[in-house]
Amino acid sequence: MPHLIREVQTPYTINPNDQAIGRETIILQRDGQPIAAVVPYAEYQELLAQRKDVAKLEPISNDPQFERERAAFQKLLPKLLKEHRGKWVAIVDEKVADVGPDFSSVIQRVRARFGKRSVCVQEVLETPRVYSLPSPHIVRR
Amino acid sequence: MKYLYNQSVSPPAPFVKLIVADPTDSTRQITVDAQIDSAADISTLPNSIVEQLELPVSGSLEIAGYDGNLSIVTLRDAVLILDKFKFSGARIVPTNADYALLGRDVINFLRLVLDGPALTLEILD
Image (cartoon, rainbow over all chains, first blue to last red; front, side, top):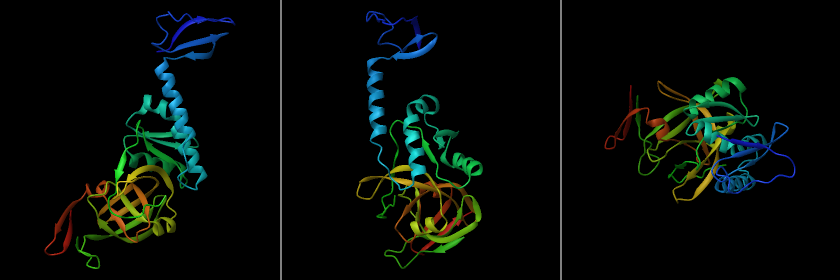
């Protein structure tokens, strides 16, 4: 749980000996509004890595609508891992449109609701599952 | 339903007649030859079928091919009909082959009898 420690004035200092620092997320507020977060260093490194992952996401199709949905999935992944780990989510218009236990149930609801359009239905996993297709077919993107 | 193995491939292999339908309009259907492939985690369709039915993009996944190389591909979704069995919301990988592959994502729902010496495949009820 984020730990609100103080209402800060500018300039401000944070005491590195504060027991909460490095252990939990600390939200700094100004006029009652959150303005910054102090996160444990390991979490900061994870966030940097995720940002790099999103930046290097190369297109796999010439379908701009799908590529937007796919990029949105990558951007939302840290939050999705907290809320829907192991489930399947549908990204439509760069937002979560459906969640379910398997691809089939999710895509059927999405087709009924949005019709024929590019969407991105993905399993919420830290590392994508690799599917084996050993027959020597040439897979098309 | 009983099928004779496809003997135009060597060695002969179990093939079925698979109906593929548009997920948003089930009246748009195409029949395609499909090989039973218990080594495949996922099913495939010829790209020509995907294009004719304009099957929509529905995601992506990582595939490890026969050479172990990884590739990221787009997925399509379709309705697959095989005899009395209907698979709505099936995941499909488009390929350049001229026949489909039915992987374990589909065949694990079926009771199949492969009779090699008789070159027959039977789908049990």
